[in-house]
Image (cartoon, rainbow, N blue to C red; front, side, top):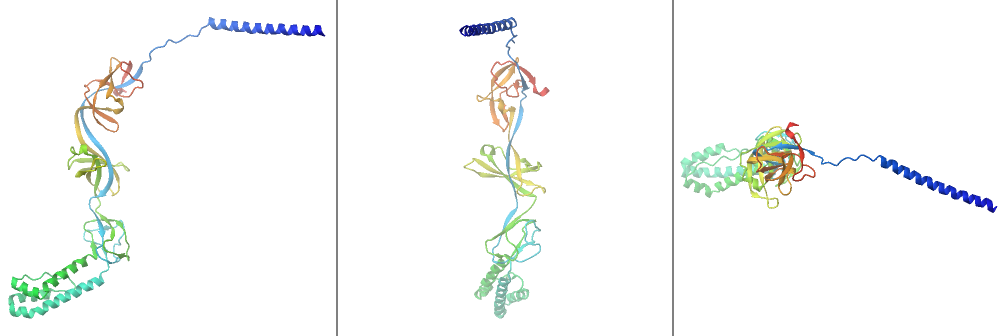
Length: 380
């Protein structure tokens, strides 16, 4: 048994040594094969980037200030009640969107009780004048004819006519009989009677109705809003630094944001007050067009000022040091410039020479002296 075990151990050691030798030989063979065929390496080179460029052409530039706002009717009134009563039903009904002609009844408030009081005061004045006629006939015959004719024109259902022309003596006489004071008191009542009937001051549309027929109306109550369509104002707030370059009557291009329609307006008013919080000034643009509606959101382009001998470029081309890259002999050269105005996307600069070639799109990792392949943007 000991001899058999010894043979087994010997065989294990022989196999172990042979396996180690085979692995070592394989490793050496692989290394020789790899060293005999080395991989080809590419030589590192400087990659030249393509860059779009454009040539400077100085000229004039009109600065337009974009502003927006909501249209409001130029002619608009709040219909406010000055008396109390029940709103009567008339034609047309007091409804939003209803058209009215100038002088047409907008609303009528029940006035029968007040009207009766006015008629009673007319009758009282009529009686006063009748009572003094005999004395006028005796003391002032010439005035008697005038007052007698006045009474004939007196109608209790209609407003009291103006008093006859009087000299000082007759005026003192009728004033002592309380005729003049009664006349003016009656005029005041008749004026109040007209407040029960609200008429349209101009051709327009009732855009808001806050009350319906049969409702109780109280003094000071707002009944609705009335506007003249086709004539509107657009209020925009502009920086105070631009106001000196804007004048009344200046034409303004106005565009509807929803429909993209364009209209022409003009500056009608400029507020004299500066908003202390925003440092802006209210400018009002008047626009006349039947296709417009109150409440539309509009955008206005106001021509504020004009620069000469300047060039407009993408504001992203200018770095924090107010420099941009020009191209000379296919290399980037940084130039110091003077930006005088910025818009949302562009910068207006001066100091560039006509014909100077500059980059028209930003280049990642650009530096002074960088070699590029310029491509004229206007030719592509």
